[in-house]
Length: 189
Image (cartoon, rainbow, N blue to C red; front, side, top):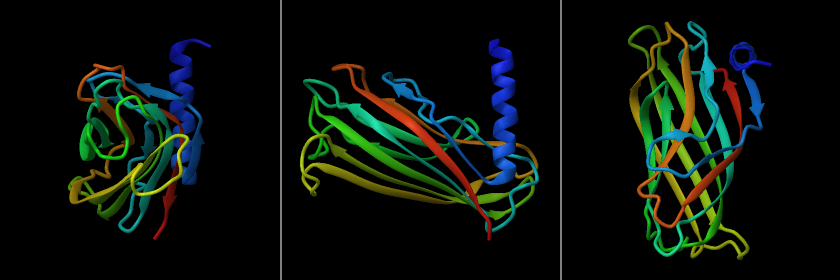
């Protein structure tokens, strides 16, 4: 299958998922650089389908390795189309995951529609759990973070793409984060 056909097929399937309100994807994306790059696939909300009270939710997770020798800050960006609407920055020296440590992570992202139309709005939320691999789970070897924003622009008159991107502050020490897949759901009011 050609690349164009593959992209067109993915877009049609994604649109169907948007109408049905749920879907899953097992695409594995890895981010190792200082430029923002997708961790999840982009999930489509079709024009005119978002109503006040609807919540769109992406759940995703995976694994990675904190930079060797010196930790690097990790930024996780919640996006609508190409716009960052919320982000979590995990400090290089976070007290739990140290240089060279392998880690596992899970994240939930939500967009709650509060107003519709060209001037539509939503509330957004990111909730992250991250822990070292191979050690007992406790407060000293894990990171939890939640971040919210209100009155975020969400134009419901056009298709919107919802997704999670990531980037590292530096590539020194070869940090990596991989998403092993994501699920998408639409929760009706």
